[in-house]
Length: 257
Image 1: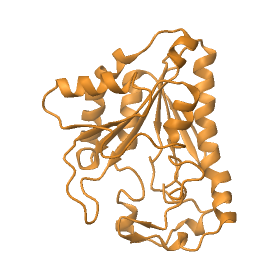
Image 2: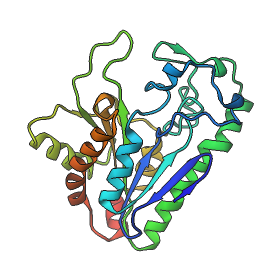
Image 3: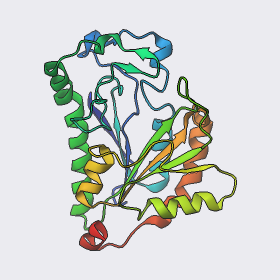
């Protein structure tokens, strides 16, 4: 395990082509950002606006099952969002699901760039380093990104899905995973729900689509994984569905197939 203010790398093996990512693993606000506080009450920092509730636990357990490496963020998405392109207006949120983020209200480009250099850039560099290590072994990097979503946003209807699979142009991992989840018959499975996976510049676009690496983003409803028992149960459920998704070992063919 290695850890920095921006990211944590967990290793449960060194030969798996799977690389797990958790962009919103933490609600921590580092001391370097406004003295460690964004001015929000604790109840808001425990909500989905600050991090993806339960996603870190699922990621750890799933990485253990797959014998793979996991890269997880160590800072709140409200500090700067590593799952957004650098030109995305939601890179740094000033208002989110009814809550104003006081420390972000008057942030200028200088501060955004400072947070980018401290947290956003090192997190993505850590992902890139792990991708290159997998490729150096002659394997195809298979990117699995773990997120969670809230059952209901302010003023919006309830979301019916227990799990959503997000993807863009590359369905090599997403389509068979959706089919396997639906075959269970007991789940309401979203295909590019509750969000679209077609977000240019996001983490999967940057490391998956743009580089030709097979990838998929998994969204689990956060009330189902708020506690450790649910996190383990979902990881245990997903692992046998993900293992068979492994593609061939020809890097050029699998990365651009």
